[in-house]
Image (cartoon, rainbow, N blue to C red):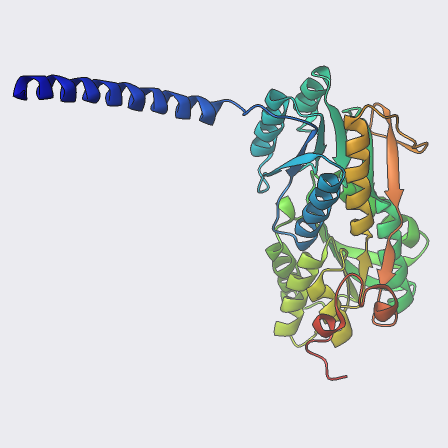
Amino acid sequence: MKKKTAIIISALLIVLLTLTGCGDEVAQTDENTPAPRDGMEIGLSIDSLVIERWQRERDLFVSKATELGAEVNVQNANGEVEEQIKQIEYFIDRGVDVIVVIAIDDEALLDVISRAKEAGIKIIAYDRLVRNANVDLYMSIDNEKVGELMATYIRKKIGSTGNIIQIKGSPTDYNVQMVQNGFERVLKNTDINVDYAEFSENWVAENGFKVTSNYLASGKVPDAIMCGNDNLAAQAIKALIENRLAGEVCVVGQDADLEACQRIVEGTQYMTVYKPVEKLARSAAEEAVAMAKGEPLNITDTINDGTYDVPYERLEPIAITAQNMDQVITGTYHQRNEIYLNVNE
């Protein structure tokens, strides 16, 4: 009996070891190979979720696409170009129907997007144009109009003369150049002087503090500060606060972040540009699903990406000040109790 029992136990151990080995092999295969999928799948590659607006737009996009019957695979590149390239390669391997990309670099994705198109995958460049890539659709706000709104407001506040500084966004983001084009067009026939300008690599917000602090340390005070977004504006205003100049210098930004709206009603930031990103995100989801179904685009506008004229869907931005905050933002984009949190009404 003891001998039979030992034989049975040995046999069981061999079976268990064999099953364990198979389990390890399967786990390794699952880790390295994209899982099979059913139905429509849309890949969404986001530059970074540090900025408030991208979190909002991700949620709106996923919600609308899911409602329309698609699965969305969201990847966050954390501001790393190589990581974003790997994410798009992963989408190609999965054979997704459509890739929606918020590009970190306007040129670095050219090769990987070409490979995706060769694989029959449709590409939507969301908010930021990918240069020379011949994407299937570019969807964004009118970025030149954003620059025009900023310059128009500065001109209104300081007149046709004065010194300003510019704290721009990332030099690899083509939107930055488009905003600059609109900004320069408005100031072209004025005596407003851009006394200093600097890009902010990867949209690092702290550059706003550094540039403003260094400028003030030189003994000069600007009449206005044009900031590439509201995060940069926050840091510029932090430097102004330290020098007891908050509210005295006209600071403008874009994105209508909650904290920017709070600063506007408090009086430390003068203006931000609201971009109807809720509408943009939902529209992008609708277009992505339509592409996945093979439906034709109903868009007639185009934009030149440097080589090709690509379909272009654009929305109009709105300048937001303390005067029109309640008409445009309050109760829709942000709630009143949040905007006026630090203000005694």
